[in-house]
Image 1 (cartoon, helix red, strand yellow):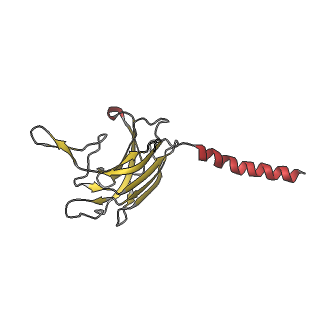
Image 2: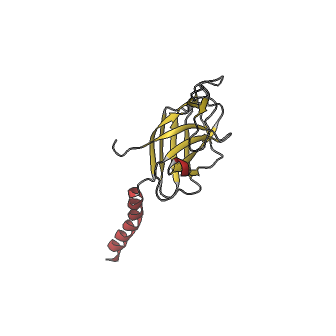
Image 3: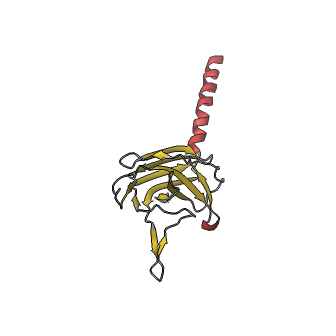
Length: 171
């Protein structure tokens, strides 16, 4: 008679952690991406204004990204699946420019946003611009992430190439 109870106890011990993990909602999630346009606009005198986001300068040339999905868990674990991150200008047009990229999550209002990044060594872009990041952010983000901004940044020079579009629960 002990065996049925032992089997039930073992099954519960195995299933309960998986159920608990499945219920954990993400800290931040992104569905879709925007490639960088280095120029945000012009001043009234015609001087270009750089497209600086959360203190991070843009790449020197425009970039495009065809797809991006990302999720950040409460413990700082981040997974980013990017597709087609390619240059859209200059002599390297249609290529990755040999870049490596990492992800930085900013939480909070623009003036006081706190950054948390995946490994700054980055991951190499595949020839077609695809990349995958599976890492843990440091420092760990706070338990709440208001106004989340996710930037995909060059490991070589620290400039941003793409941004995530925050996922809406309404979709």
